[in-house]
Image 1 (cartoon, rainbow, N blue to C red):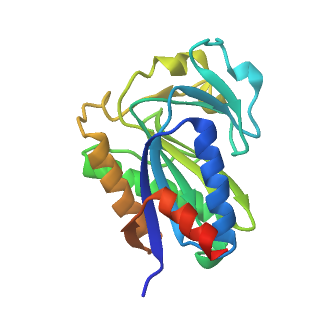
Image 2 (image 1 turned 90 degrees about the horizontal axis):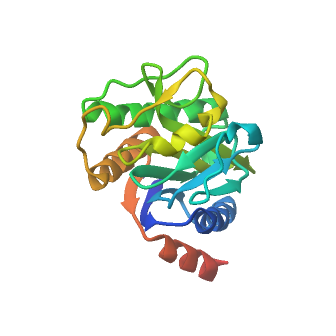
Length: 224
């Protein structure tokens, strides 16, 4: 029987709270107490600066948007309403010990989802993420410890994209940002959540199982 991919829909979660949630789940996954996890959620407005991020890429300080330094790879990006954020807690030692391939699989799963909604997206040979022409529609940044991943992707479904004007997204000065809504797609967040769950389960060759993150943490705590 295939291993499970436990998919949790967590609604709107502040960035710091989601980071702590990931840290707990990553430790439990590394100890073999839970299966691989995909957290699907949305953040209140926040700029996040990755390990290789440069402060100068925050062009305009916004009093209404928090800036958080974090331990994922990559530069600066924005999270906010209308965006689906997916955090992947995956044991690559039980899948394949190839981080580059994992990045490609994340991109491919999102490209598949966008295609199902009529959007022709693709890879870029120079940069990570998912692209429609020269515009990024999904950003990807990961952290890995003991071959267990955390962080993941952010897919722009709809919402206000003007916050990206305050930064140099992912440090790229010659590229734009787009969303499914801007491209004429009226898919709901719930439809996108469901499509992402299905696509990632197939891509990672896992059996999809919906779960509550609170139950995973409680069960894992009891098991330890």
